[in-house]
Image 1 (tube, helix red, strand yellow):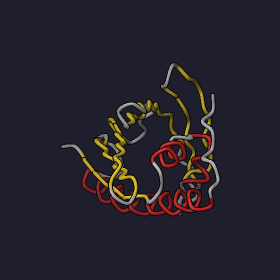
Image 2 (cartoon, one colour; image 1 turned 90 degrees about the horizontal axis):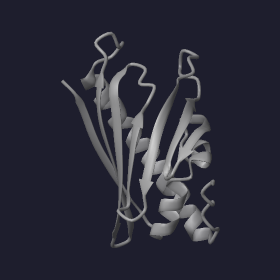
Image 3 (cartoon, rainbow, N blue to C red; image 1 turned 180 degrees about the vertical axis):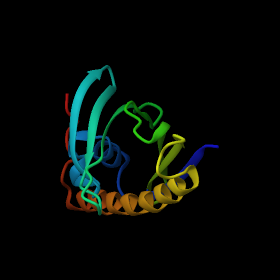
Length: 159
């Protein structure tokens, strides 16, 4: 059995602002409420290998893992995967952006499987990811729309 989620939101902002802000890894702790830090480990072309560290959970546990992320501006897509999978047998994430009336539709698709020894199963994680994605996407939408409305330039992507 495997898990699959797909969540989307429309952001009332120009494509360049949405793309730049959501692909600025260094700024993710300001964009997402769940991430305490991002450490870039390597860059190879457009692909970035990085460590994400979350804020402590309700039990005081700090979760951290290494992922790879490769944006493709020409196709308005991003492919990502966990390198350090933790409780996941695998975790692959696909982001897609599409200009639509009123802004930009951002779609996150996640395909994964939990390891047999993981404390939760695929169904539990599917529900958890769906709940959390809606919260994070709404926060991102609000922050990107606020930046676009204020006329602030989107943060520059790190070299």
